[in-house]
Each structure stands twice: as C-alpha cells, then as structure tokens.
Length: 462
Image 1 (tube, helix red, strand yellow):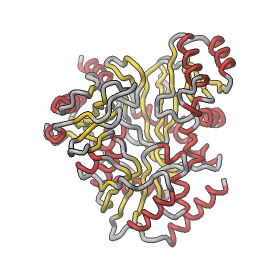
Image 2: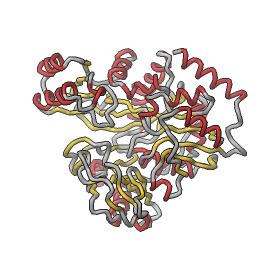
Image 3: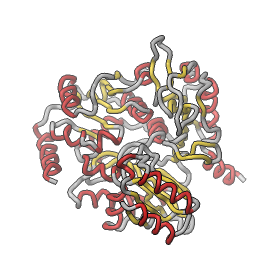
Image 4: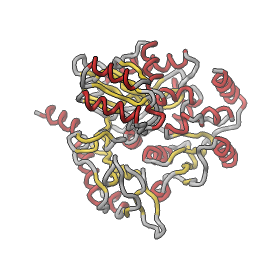
C-alpha cells in the first residue's frame, strides 16, 4: 500500500501547490475509451460550463461526427507514459477513465502519481471488479449482504459442491470476461457445462481459472451507481438494464440491450438502505484495507423477492453501458466540476441536479451478437433518426468509417438510441421512433425495453 500512500500524499500536495487546473475557470478533459459509455460521458462533459475542450482517446467515428469530443485515435491508452506526456502537452486538467481494462492495468495509479487528477480507481481498488473472489471476501469481512458462495480452482471439487447445493445455481469466472463470464444454471448439467467451459476449455482464458459458485437469488435486478472520492459516496439516480438478448428477457446474457432511468423499483427508502448497508461499508472497507476507492461504484443488485432487501451481486468500477447513456441524458449538473470534486476528495460539498424526465436507451446490435457477427455493415440515416425529436440522442458504441466514408458497424453493440420523455411511454415512443428511422438491415434490437416499468405504471393506473 506504499504506492497508495504516496498517491494520497501527492494529491494533498497538489491541492496546495499544483498547477492551476481551471484555466479561466474552464478545463480540458480527456476521456479514455471508445464505446457508448464514453460517448455519453463526452456528451455530458461538452455541456459542462466548467469544461472547455473534451478529448476522447481513442473515441470512435460517431463521437467525432457528433462533435461531442475531439477524438485522438492514435494515442496508445495502454501506455501510461504516452497518456501522461499527451496530458502535459495538451494541458489536460482531468482524465476520466471509461473502461475497466486500463483501470485494472493501473493507468489511474500512474496518472495520479504524475500529478494528473484522474477519475477512476487505482488497480488495487479496481480489484472489486477485476476479481469476484476479492469482492466476496470484502463482503464477508465488512458484513455487506451478498449471495452465499464458495471459490474453486479445481473443477472436480467445484462440481462436487454444485451437486451438494443443487440447481438453480450461479457460476462465475473470477476475472474480467467482458460482462459475459456469468452462467445462471437452471439445471445441474448446465452448471457442470459452465465449469467445463471456464475451467477445462478455458473459454475465458485465465479469467476462468478460478470460479466463484453462488446461491441463486430470486428477485428483481437493479443497477445502482455512486460517485466515490475515497471517503464520501454520492448516489446517482437509479437505472435498470436489460441483460438478455431477446424480447421477454430470453436468450443469453449480453453487455446490455437497453436501459431506463429512474428504475421504479429503487424507491427513496430502498436507496438509503443500499447506501447504508452496501455502498458506505464498501467505501469504508476499501479505505481500511489501504486501497481507497476513487471513481464510480456500480453495484449490480438483486432486490430479493422474499425479504425485499438488496443483496450485492457484483461490483463494476466504471459507469455501466448502457446505463451511463440514460444517466447522462438526465444529469443537469456540471459533470466536469462534480468529477473533479471526486478527484480532490471534496464530494461531501456536492449535490446533483437531475431532470425529472424519464430516459430510455434501446441498443442496436449486429445480427449474431452476443455470438459471432459480421463487421463492416453500412448504417444510414443516423442524422435523420436524431431529428425525430429534440429529446433524442444517438450514442455510438461500435462504429467506424469505411474507405468510402460510410458509417459502418464494427462492434457487437453498435448504437444506443436514447430519448427522454415526461413518462416511460413517451420516452419509449420517441426512442423506438428514432430506431425505426435508422437504416441498418444487419442490425437488431429488443422491442420491449422498459417493460417492467411500463407494467408497474399500468398497475398504478388501475
């Protein structure tokens, strides 16, 4: 933890003596990453009064085209030295790290050490996402409610435990598997298959050499986000993601096919229970372990059917994608100022303002996702789709320009068609209206995003 102490010390010194971060009150911000989440962050930062220029590395064609940031496609974000010298050359006042990869690799450690305010956790603190076993042990130690579990490195022992416990049961690869290393097995055979795939066939590489086996929790899932400055945590609005690929929540899990905010299931009362029993004990526990957490904590929760209480399923150490898109659509505060306060340990003084409207995002993905899909298919009519309503914004995740200057799909999840409305019906109507204008025959999307919230609203109206 020597690194961490030095980091904290240099942070304190910087507060007193460091270079002025806000040039005439306005700064240059560098966003690391190039997906839908990063596009949404760029969009919110561009609207921040305290932000002068938004740079995004590597960014993507859609971010550049929509002018939400200047994309720096040739900056090697896996090299801390390259990022540091770029920041010095361009007078970057703050770096916001989007994806988990660079965080787990220690980019934030190096930037903070170099005196550059960075929103995102150190590699030690990023272990909350980088290792499910680390997260579970923290829960044990600090009494944070989570599913019962055991960790295994031996496939035969793992199978024995599954046989004892029975199905349904949950099998997770310990390491990073791009949101895909979790199998909710409804039968023993499915669970055994998951063990073979992760531990024997190594389908997730080293991420699956250790597995965490958990009890199956029944209830409704919710995503909960809090900004953290090492000591204080500030809750963001709630959001709910749709993980399954198909309508009616069918088919395999994906990185997320759509989301909406707020999530009716997260009442004000539940929000304070989550903060008191899960978020605050995590922040305090991490500080006690000598690895203070600075960044966004994204808790995947199960609101248990039988108790109505939240249990922690997993942590991510970054904004969720596509939840980030709906949150940034609703945020009215100066995001640059808020994130800088987190970097400086001053979140205690901050409060956030949100639009009372509902936001919804529908993800358009390449045919075949989450399995293999074709790259390079042409997408047309994006501008037209954005003109359906001033309340519509399209965030780009996996897009690029081909040799002829056409916008093409290069990822699994490609577009996040997002809209705001006075209620869930209006937001949904606008989002799907825009989706229907996008001309992309090789794309697909779910038709039922927001169905849980709609159901709740319909019951409330009777």
